[in-house]
Image 1 (cartoon, rainbow, N blue to C red):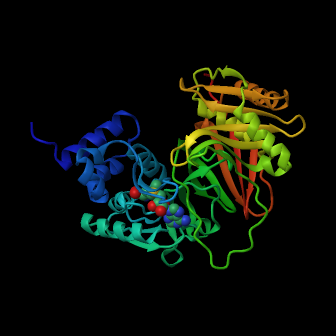
Image 2 (cartoon, rainbow, N blue to C red):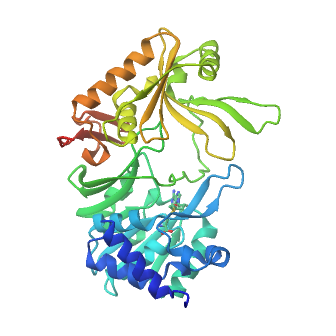
Image 3 (cartoon, rainbow, N blue to C red):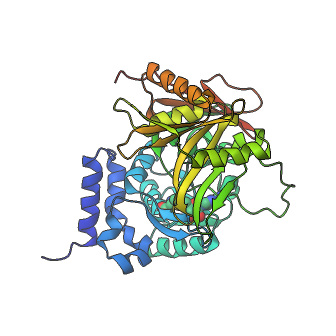
Amino acid sequence: MAEPTSADLRRDLVGHLREAGYLRDEGVAEAFATVPREIFLAHHVERHGLADAYRDDAIVTRRDPVTGAPTSSSSQPAIMAQMLEMLGVRRGDRVLEVGTGTGYNAALLAALVGDEGRVTSVELDADTAVAARRALVTAGAPVRVEVGDGAAGAPEAAPFDVAMATASTDRVPRPWFDQLRPGGRLVVPLRLSRVVPGLQAVVAFRKARNGFDQVAVIGGGFIPLREAPRVDAPPASPARSVALEVADARRDRLLVEVAGPALAGLDRRARQRLVVTSLGFGRSRAVPVGGAPGVALLAYVALALPEERLVEVSRAGSRSTTAREALGVVDAVDGSLALLARAPDGGLRLDAYGGPGAERAVLAAIERWRLAGRPRIADASITVRYGPVRPHGWYSARRGDHWIALDWQRAPDR
Ligand SMILES: C[S@@+](CC[C@H](N)C(=O)[O-])C[C@H]1O[C@@H](n2cnc3c(N)ncnc32)[C@H](O)[C@@H]1O
């Protein structure tokens, strides 16, 4: 049988995205059917073949040479399709993209805005930007790629009708607000918890008078937006998080690492005790999630408890691979620790160490989640407000010059 062509594979991808419910918009479907993904994944295709470029998966294209952590990728088509639909981009729009990566999403945006529109994309890494520019020329996609910190937007090309970030951030930089026209849409993967970076909500916002209001939200998981190195960097502020590691003789295996804001409230001995405690045997129990995804409860607990009580605990992994991570809750009074982690069956496990304080706090938060109807990220309503006034909300966090607030929309009965 003949090998499928690029056009066949694109048609199949569109078919899969439609069937799975990730793609409804005709324009977005047409863009996926037209733009060849392999042009943006040349090295990957050389090694794995053409068909592999059309897997509905994120494909990592660059890694940090020291840690091995991914620093650039072509995002998963399913999430790209949803984000493009959430953006509501139209022909003729002026678009800002933050995080050019391979350039594939920028090419889809260029197809959506047509000749009358304009796409400007900002990439922090110069080599990545050069490769993306080349691929975009090959694909015939007219995109202006700028090298720089996307947190500053692209002032020369502003104003924009819509903007999107394809890297995750825990703040919404003011330039994104300033450079967007009134009522314009911004789609951004937000890291809601500073302690558990995996807890992300991909939010479509509409620009309001003094911030952003949510239009739509889905779950997601994106590479973090990196801070550009600054020449005029201010002196480092006292660390809010301290990492403690116990490495074995080969200095490769990580036995345990505890990091997070709760460490700042403990003295040296209490921190050491915490590390030793988390290596011992805890009182372990399964946490029923009633059919909801475990991550929904993890997100709720991480946001329900004060950040000052939280740590992230990574155990038994090599430094270069992802260790098993858990959300840790610390009770500074009785020195106890409770760890909440994803279990292989999709639910959660709770491990409690020492006194009852930390365990009780977690169990109380779990009970509140249950009583609230087991809300998940898709039930969140998130707003951003610039200025000093704290907005009302079940959860709110100060992020430099703005607040991010979250309320739960009435969770449907499940
Ligand atoms: C998930 S990838 C982007 C995927 C891309 N849109 C595509 O279609 O291939 C995230 C990208 O954001 C870039 N990035 C990280 N921090 C950045 C920053 N502060 N400004 C601009 N780009 C940044 C990374 O180098 C990486 O290439």
